Length: 188
Image 1 (cartoon, rainbow, N blue to C red):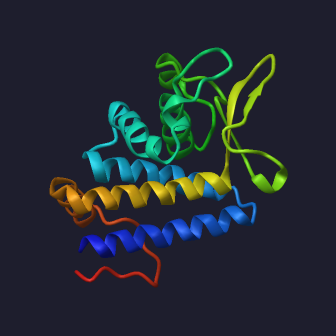
Image 2: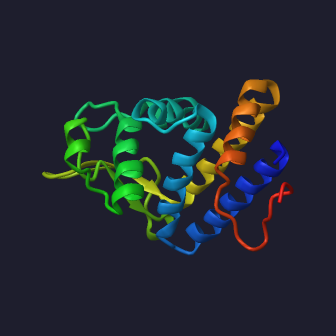
């Protein structure tokens, strides 16, 4: 599969997520979290804890510096780690926002990320703190748009960095992403 086909595929999936988010659909968080895990593998070779954190800092950090520099009320500046524990290990692997024992032992905090919608009056990167929680709010609408902008950055970098383009095409050809009936790769 060619790099432009891959880019078009991911842009189309992002447009679908954005549409879901604007309807108040919670599935955008599962779709987006799964896509981030795939994008990590696609750009860095595998989705280890270190690579996932690196991916968030490098790519999402370009979209919005708060993805790498957000500070919780307790002073922790570890949103990329909390995204790994909550989005990848929690939502994708456990269908939950609560880290398992491994996540907790790796400094994961329960509900360090809360999921919401702008249509319900919430703001992306707003803080929420009470006696039990010290959280950041992610809104579905902005989260989906940030994933699309991250994809734009990935493919922009791939135009000038041949090793990244090769990494992307090799990964996608070896592990094709899920596809609906309207998308069939040219290599089939």
